[in-house]
Amino acid sequence: MIRWSTPIVAVGLFLCAVLLSGCGGKDRTGELTLAVGGAPNEVAFWEGLANEFESDSGIPVRIIRQPADTDQRRQGLVVPLRSGQRDPDVFLMDVAWLGQFAASGWLEPLDEFVQRDDYHTGFFFRRVVEMADRHRTELIALPVNVDAGLLYYRTDLLKRFGYDAPPETWEELLAMSERVQKEMRKSEPRFFGYLWQGARYEGLICNFLEVAASNGGGFRADTNGIRVDDQANREALTFMQGLIHDARVSPPNTFTEMKEEEVRSQFQNGLALFERNWPYAWALHNAADSPILGKVGMAPLPHFQGGESAATLGGWHIGISATSDQKEAAWSFLKFAVSLDVQKRMVTELGWNSARRDIYQDRALLDQQPHLEHLRDVMVHAVPRPLVPYYTQISEALQSRINSALAGQTSPEEALRLADEDMAQVVNRYSGE
Image (cartoon, rainbow, N blue to C red; front, top):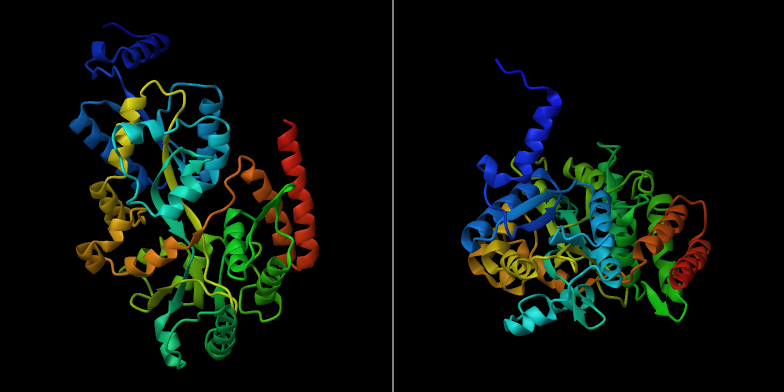
């Protein structure tokens, strides 16, 4: 009997992996590499798409699996892109990364492909493409799915307390929350009027932007960079702080623990009247084992008197590496990923929300998932975060200051003044590099 030593086996396996054809594997010449991450079902979906694309096109596709954690996924792309590696050829990007990736020159412009193939992008929501997928004048990515903040509410409780519709203004939400919470607390002391994401992470910026923009505020750009210290934003942050400390219709752990899943779980367990969350929560609230199945409604987020409802734009976009050696194959895959058939399957199988406007006009799909009609108008008016290469740094600075105000450690006025100073330092550092 021949006894193979461990090192010899290891070398043999390595050579087999490299020389696939010699070990019975496929010929991977001209291979397209695709980097994807997320939940297991999402990665499995993309693996299925890759297999389908490979079968139809004859172009071999290799999946580079990334973690579920968004920050780890970003870093896993930054390293090869910064060093100019050929792989991955194609990858998904959170909308908040696009500014950095584009400014760094890591993304292949798509305009030549679009013009050559007479490929029309008009079926996408125009606001999404113009606000997120264009850097200066160049098209640098295509939207795979879009997210926007929504208001979920208990239809049974609104009816029970004599309300015909969800609140249109923040003032109405506060009044409803106070009344219903007071009554519900008689039997359930853990009940709250309104749940939202206030912990120190990117979700806090999304929530702040929605409240501020609905008051005519938000991010302001000027010669010094990006500012948030103005009257509209001070009023918005004061309102958010008051939900926790004055009216107390939001939990005291809002600024320490409340992220998407903490909010969703508490609302789904019947412990709140209103919830701010992303569209993904709809399917979970209406799952067969949900305690609030059939008792949930969806609406645009409220606004202040004289303002308009605003929802922060989120979602994932697909692009091609500027140093890819398979750009033609990559472009073919991009078109495949955003095609009508694939986008429908993302809606039905993943619960994702398409950036294609025609999805929301598909009567068969709307009959199957009627909540999509509510999402259409929200997506049209979604508010983007600044598309700048230093967005991550200014977001971290703003998270710290806003969270401090929500904790009651600083006033809204002081928090926003300091945030402006912090963000100016970020811009100065970036400009000096």
